[in-house]
Structure formats: structure tokens, C-alpha cells
Amino acid sequence: LPQLLAEHGVESFAVGKWHLAGGPPPDPTHALKVGFAHYSGYPGNPPGASGYFEWTKHSDGSTEKVRERYLTTEEVDDAIAQIRRTPEPWFGWVAFHAVHAPLHAPPASLHGATLSGNPRRTPRAHYDAALEALDREIGRLLAGIDASVLRRTTVIFVADNGTSRHG
Image (cartoon, rainbow, N blue to C red):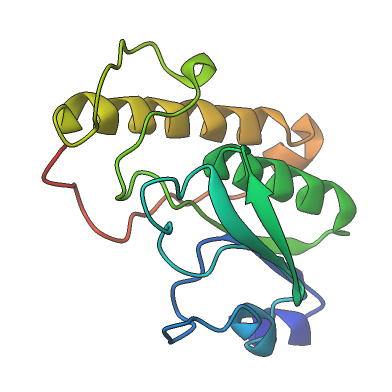
């Protein structure tokens, strides 16, 4: 798709989960190899119990160890920045890791749940909190797009795994 769009003058970028890169370990440059002009994110599933707060960010071939930045928030920040710097027409693929295992407690500012203890003991509450956090961040993403650009933009939502057993 990005190669075809590029042939018609459309620049494309991918942000977030790029789970098409083989592995393990996944190839963090795969999105670029298939034609995206820019890629930032983590190409696999979140790593381990701290995966939403401690992960390796890949950005156009470089890597950065991320600590204490929420993965979903970082994906929205990257998407907004990319939208603002990419000339129109553009195609953006924003693939969120949430809501996906490992279950976790998102930043309190992104949900209204009262979470306590281990996510394994209260999986539904943690799943719901992560879903609410994702919903709020998608709202921030859409609000972060200039209104005149948003009027000319088609947004398509899809999910890759269906509903979790926790949801």
C-alpha cells in the first residue's frame, strides 16, 4: 500500500505496532522496507509486565530505550507530530498496542478506575482502564489534527485480535 500510494504522490508513515516484521526478534526497519517514508514505534507485542512503560522505541532505523513514558501516549505523540510535518496528501497507519497483554495500570490521568493490586487478580478492571486510556488518547489524536485537515481526512478503526477474554 505505501509503495502504491507513493507512486501517486502520497507520503506515508507508520506509527506504533508493526507486527508484520517476522522474528523473533522482529525487524524494526521492516515498515520502511515495504515503503513507508517514516516509522516509529515498537514492532512486536509489549515486552513483559513493564512493557507499556519500558520498551525500545525504533524510529527510522535508530533505537531509544524508553522508560516511564506510556506506550499509548507516545504513539499518539508520534502520530500527531508526523501528521503535522508530513505534507498533504498523506497516509498514516497508527497501530496501537493497547488493549493487549500484558495487562497493566495506565496512568491515572487517562482513566477513572480504581485499580489496586496485581492485574492478574483483577484483569477486567485493568482491561477496562487500558481501554478507557486508549479511547482518551484516540480523542487526543483526533483533537490534535488541525480542523481543516481533519475535514479532509478519512479515519478507519480496525482491531487485530477481536475482544480479549478479559473484555
